[in-house]
Length: 447
Image (cartoon, rainbow, N blue to C red):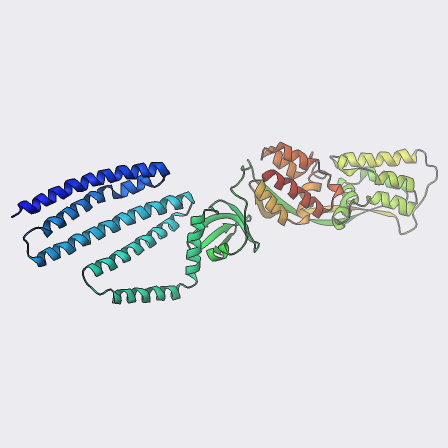
């Protein structure tokens, strides 16, 4: 009584396993010919399940040829078909999850995004499998489909603002054009490092350390400039400082060239700095810069245009210290007075009043760890900050060049760029023009 069903089972198993082996060989050849990257994944996902499917088919056919009552045959058939559907669903879930993990890992998606996508895929396959099983057992599926539709509509209404961001997040992850760690700038003005891409919103860390949360739907529908991955980190970050400039009377005044000369030899260096540089900031839109105060007073008040021209021709950029600049101005006046016999006095009330500059230096919120962060901060710092790092650092602080050049050379290992920045003559630019020139030099280097 069991001989025929047993023979059928054995025959179907032998033939099925042989066909399975031949099928995998043909599949291997096809995948190798087309260089399909998911070949190994597909084999691993179906290897054990395909043997189970062969057994289920053999068992079903052996039951069909047996002498069992028809109702038993039908029941066993439904059970075996249900097992087949469930096993296929398990294989589909495994294969789908491996694809999701591989693609999202390649796109540098966050662990939370990967987990959420896995759950969604598993849920969809599970629901479809449940509907198929209900249909196999003859249970009406219309109520379940209606219930599912109601649940979906309710979820869409409840999360109507979340759904667009959810799909945008999946699309961003799949496209792989934006990755965590990229420096981006949105068309709406926000910019910084992309630190996280979740399924609903993305997080951008600005240069001042603050975080900006951007809905993924907005990220998908605005212009995004991606500057790529971070550049080589500096050994020490560059901290931008700003300063407030105050002017103060010294109580000293000169009524002629001899008095100007004597006072020029002894006044504080901050006085020399003020009278040769205050025009640069107060009238920063003028280029080249106006003559220093000494030249203007000698020409306009004393009426000595020859000496005034000599003082005006002093190239401030060629001096690396205020002491050297003072010495040059004193030398010009002494040389001129050696051949001057007439003592010209300034009209009453038009004497030269010596002033000095007082600077209050404060740190800004901008900190640059590489050249990209540096150039982005350079766009935003005030003109006072730019003036401090270029002009004051060179003369008042006695440095060989400006702060920018020193940092690029010593901490970023960019000697060529540092040399270009060091050789920029800031006195031939307005402050905005100087900012623009610096930005162009650095952007050319990092592209």
